[in-house]
Amino acid sequence: MIFISEEAKKQVKKLKEEAGVGEDYFIRVSVVGGGCSGLTYKMDFDNESKPNDQVFEDKGEKLVTDLRSFLYVCGTTLEFSRGLDGKGFYFSNPNASRSCGCGESFAV
Image (tube, rainbow, N blue to C red; front, side, top):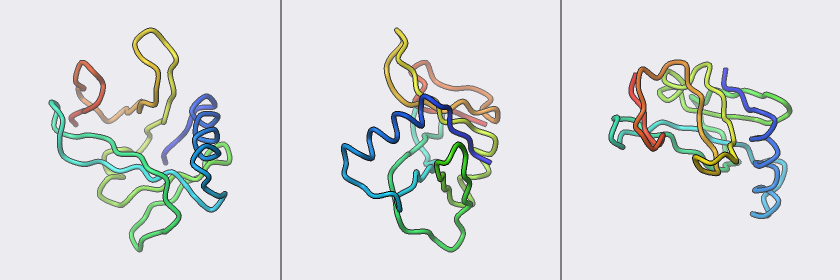
């Protein structure tokens, strides 16, 4: 499962409104190679499911990932921070063995 915090959910709702996307859009989370630790998260709005998608719902928000990415993000929570270390979305991933200093990439 993939989870979303209350604060991240509020920010997603705000971004959907600003982008003018409908309720049929969901959050697509994927993992791609790159970054200084080897793997990077990617997050987009999407409204088309693919055959091997893993679909989850938390706090009324639909989160979708492909099967390969799910192996890296299982149990992960999408968070949002307004703290001094930067404003924005980040992933709290229990599977990550290390992450880079900027928090943009990770390794398992």
